[in-house]
Image (tube, rainbow, N blue to C red):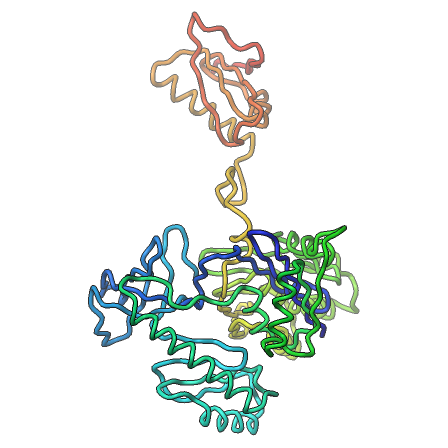
Amino acid sequence: MVRELVIDDAPGYLRAAVLEDGRLCEIHGEKSGGAGETESVFYGRVQAIKPSLRAAFVDIGAPLNAFLPLADGSTLRCGDFVIVQGQAKQATETKGLRVTDKINLAGKWLVLIPGQSGVHISKKVKNPELRDVLTDIAQRICPPDCALIVRTASEDVTQPILEEEARALYAAWQEIGKKAAGMTKPGLLHGRLPLHMRLIRDIRELSRIIISSQAGYDALLAAQREQKIDAQTQIELYREDRQLIFDAFGIETQIDKALRRRVWLPCGGYLVFDFCEAMTVIDVNSGKMILGRDLEETALRVNWEAAEEIARQLRLRDVGGIVMVDFIDMRREEHRQALLTHMKEALSGDRSQTTVEGITRLGLMEMTRKRAHTQLHKALTVSCSYCSGDGAVLSGEEVARRALRQVRRMLLAGQRGPFVIRCAPSAAQALEAIPAQGAQVFALAVPGRHAEKFDIEQIGEDVPIPREAKPLKTRND
């Protein structure tokens, strides 16, 4: 697999795309010079303790207090100073940053956990002998009063390199402690790396990095000389003389497709994504797929491709929480088990923690995924001003009937008309086909009016009826 990182280093905003064999698998964005929250370390002061929430609210120098979950037996009190670190869930306009007092300083091969003890090996390192070797190395190089996590990328790294990184991480922690000792009010202690450097640190086996700015290119070369980027990774400068970098790699088109509800598969089948408050539901459909000797073979082929595409889409859209997949029904148990195994293999390249729980009694595949960032459609879109996120608006005919019911209410209240209903063109057209009852009613189409909105005006003797208004048929019964 050819894995590439394409960096659009535009003024004010940096975007980074992860491509695998030319297909977009991850998209990330960050404001240039942003304060950064995830991984940043803060010096905070406890403002309030909420026993019912088992949490504290901590002033970290941000507009909103941070949310700090408390462990059983916590001795924190209001006014205490505490060192905390931002977690994956970012702050929003109404909620402060979620933080933890268990600090993790991540390097390319190791993660240092001050105040803890022991060494831990990444679960993705499967070889028992290699796990023993890495455990032995980690125990020898682990700094005092700290724990170490050996990351998957350490599989082929020598002890001197790991030891050097352990020293660097410990020096960073000591520097944080010195800075905290000299602070008298909440604020930032240790900022996180820029977006593209965090990705380079965390992504394994990058074949190529392409960046659109000269300054960024020079910085990457310097980082490679400092062994922060693998020597075999090719670094290229893309000059946007004729075409923007994301256009040149077809990334913009793939981002637009990732925002759609329907995703087509090469075989002619398709996926439908529905995002609920508590979970994401994915429906697999055969669509235009007609190949296969029978229904079972057709279902297996569509489901097989669907599993691979679902794994990619979960990463690309950064879907988190519970995910339920309604694959096409298959009668044979060996096919269902093969699909379950294939789904797990397809998800193995996901850097976020993903667990396939199995297939439910109703035939749904159930899984969970830990979201690392803002979900793509929430990051790039806002709720529709027409439907407020429902995905549908009332039909013109229904709006017309609701308007006429309001006219009847006005008649019952003693008003006698005539009435002019101002509404969207779709509702006005529907009104022309519905007879009014008990009064003279006119429909006036207002271009640009919200499809569901209307207002009704009673016309008096001194007020002329608008020339564009069209009278409705009347019914006297």
